[in-house]
Image 1 (cartoon, rainbow, N blue to C red):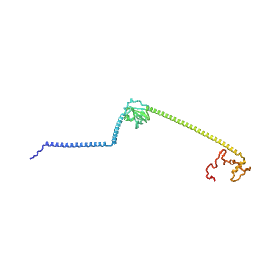
Image 2 (cartoon, rainbow, N blue to C red):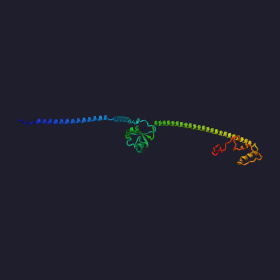
Image 3 (cartoon, rainbow, N blue to C red):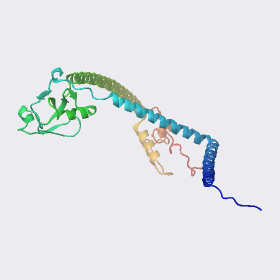
Image 4 (cartoon, one colour):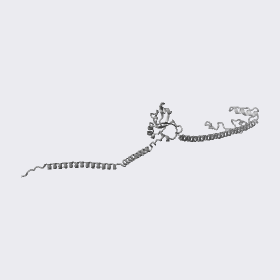
Length: 337
């Protein structure tokens, strides 16, 4: 028959350890598999994203490239600006003995190591700061620091924004040298440059004014010459018209005189017939139709020429052709019967 043999205590501990190792190895392999699966999924997603982005339109890819280039350029500009800022760092302050003499119009005040404590000056904001007030009992007041002056330099460094941290901290240190300038002060070279520019501008302005005056004089001279020519032409036209009128008047007078002479000659020819016959002819022409006119000298007839010596019925009168009665106008009632 079969029999059961109890295991030894050493063998039992060894078996438990083996089981535990197998379990740990299984857990570790499961964890590794999970990590590997996660990595594979992540890689698949990245590949899918790359594939989708590659299949997008060219315009989106170009815009993305442009944005990337802009970002890169901004970074480069920022780096260049940082380098520029570094290059604009404030220069070191000079010792008092090495400071150059102040320029014309600049007032310098030096505060030694013994003059510690507040200066007694109140500044305004901005650059360059303006001295708003000076305490009369302070070091600045005793040295005669003026109010309403601008701070030009501190220890030889100009009051500009890039020197702000250095110069403002120097106010608390000793020794310190303050250069003050009145408001509106400008360096001598700049004043000379401004004066030179002003002189150039004034010379250009004077030249332009002279040219404008010459142009106006030329225009006025041309206008005067034109007016003079027009006046001469107008006078000539008036003189011509006057002469023409005088000639026409002279011709008219001559014509009237000639006509008068002709009329007088004609009248003399008419008066050549006896008065008795002329009166009889006048009575005959003025008599009513069918009435009798008696001639005083007993004549039975009159010369026909006497019956045409009236202007109303004459074809010619004093050498002028007379118009027909009615002026040649058509009269529908004037018919032959």
